[in-house]
Image (tube, rainbow, N blue to C red; front, side):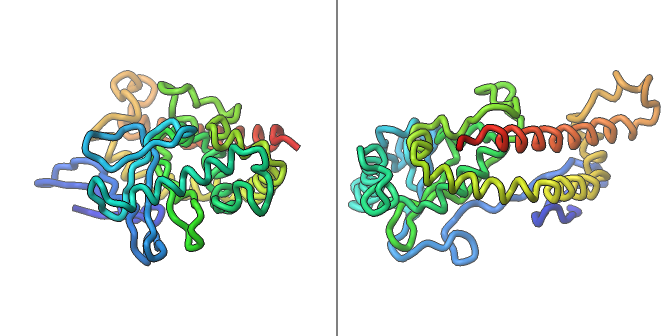
Length: 280
């Protein structure tokens, strides 16, 4: 197995008997640890995910569309901590949907970590992450002060226009994450909107740095992508394109560079649309 460095991760190119088997991505899981997700004593990690299976430790929250699965620590049915964790969600929800929810002392901020809810929202809305309406892979955990904290951010395989077959979130126009019930309610708080606008502007003003990073890493990976395409043929049908690109290497390079261009173009259009449509 030969390895290459990519975006801080390790992506191996697998060979068996000198026969390429393609690229495999190794990914760290979200887990409690000082070097991963450091949780306070008696802390916990939960995930909103529609894809639960029988036997898992889950509970439901009225204004959340998916069940909540407890990811850490390991528990058995009947563990009193399950009810304690659920109570954190229910307290936050009750405050969020109360008449005085914007009150800075006794409203939603009493139970929810504002900074994390702003950050998580901005990152997922920029990506127009299909799953980030609390459909799946939406993580929450306990803050040191006991508040409900969003994150870590996770799972962008159906973001950045890559969800043409599900929910139709591929166009760069339109808000998506704010359509979830909790974020719809948060958007009714003018102070929350101001915080979102400020944080979005920070990313917007640095967007060309991100495009440069995408382009740089894309070029670093290019020779391995060509090798991958020779195994899986996921980029293009070289037989169909051979009359235009007689060199069998040129076709996947052209297709790959076009996909990179589309990603950067989609992201720029997304940034500009949000910039022009954030409510005052």
